[in-house]
Amino acid sequence: MRRVLTAATTALTLTTAGTMLAGTPGQAAPTGWGRPVVSAAPQPGAPGLGDSYFPDYGNGGYDVEHYDVRLRYEPATDLLTGTTTILATATADLSTFNLDFLLDVESVRVNGWAASTSTAGAHELVVTPARTVTRGQQLTIVVRYSGVPSEALVNGYTGWTRTDDGALAVNEPESAWWWFPSNDHPLDKATYDISVSVPTGVEVISNGVQPRPPLAEAGNRSRWIWRTTSPTATYLAFMAIGQYDIVTDTTPSGQPVINAYSTSLGALGPAARASIERTAEIVDWESGIFGPYPFEAQGGVAGPVDGISFALETQTRPVYGPGFWRRGANTYVVTHELAHQWFGDSVSVADWRNIWLNEGFASYAEWLWSEEQGEGTAQEVFDFTYASYPADDEFWQVLPGDPGAARVFDNAVYDRGAMTLHQLRLAVGDDAFFEILPTWTAERRYGNGTIEQFQALSERISGLDLDDLFTTWLFTAGRPDVASAARKAAPPVEPRSWAKIRESHHLMSH
Image (cartoon, rainbow, N blue to C red):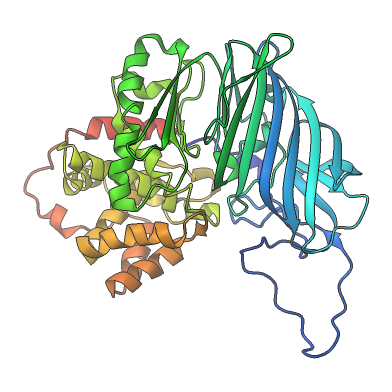
């Protein structure tokens, strides 16, 4: 969970041309079968993808395949300079197109030709190529830039966290604006090469694997290089820069495991290690429930004491704030963020309204882990969670299936979201339920999904009409009736896992 820029997401009037990405439903075919079709004049690409909560996030008219992000960072001043090369394909004839970005731009080139730029809205870089872009054209967009990310504010807020020894580029639903220009929406995933030059002795951790060890550069500097070859949403790309102890290993199958621990953690360090070093074990367990692990590497980053206060499922390597270790080891937050590798990372939301598909599923993974660890069955955790929120609690007024832009990470999305999945499990039975989960991740691997599509899959596998269940638990205000819980003569007993789950969710959703 992370902070949401609700004030910066005023709906825009989107240009019709170029609002669709490749792989998403497009415009109707031209009419006049058998007659010549006159192409429309090139149009500006849309400044947003029309997300129902954040309509100006992302951009229309092109589809990105790869980002090559090459940076130089100065921890002492927070100065970031960079060149990002974007490989993309035009999905419309374009006179201009937008990138989501905040830092000062020195130059932009499109297929080698210098382009002119301007800014619009809260985070839009408008690029006017020297030559018109045609639909289907391969684009190489090179952006040179610099700035101090912690001073780049949108409505008084920066998604870049400066720390005593470096910085964290970690946030949701927006993070890229502060360090690389992008098409910033989960509908447009891409692969990444990320390389960062820092003073020697400073570490840089990012997504995927290291193709080579850090390279020595002139001026007592080192360049860290990371690569991820799996499709990745922009907000799931990250950097952690500072003083870190890095621990590497491999899984029994030979997959690299790379964990990193801030040296500032002090007494919190052992608890962080006792949690994150179980990553490979938890991934193996979750793979038996959700299907094969979808990415090329595993790991985790324990951030510094002056870093973020939440945790984020950054792809291949979640980042955890220090608060999760203050009461000792916590494998529940690790289970939650690793479950996101399937639910949120591999299968991402098609629209931010569908956030339940991320948070409800990752939260239910904690309940399943509780059962696996003998610290309370999923039914026991459900009963206690349900009973912990009185019927008149505001909690029951938030709709997990449509919480609103300001409450995307509300506690109800997590807890009532997990309750919804448990009710689905009870309704369809374990055989169908544990077929639904891996089928969803297999059929939509590296893609996107909606709640309605998940309901349709659940109905297809179970053979049941589940509309009442989904409507009641996701889209209806008020506390649903649960007869089995109501018949209990005594309040449910608190599961041993509850304190850790509750503590983790408080940090995640605040």
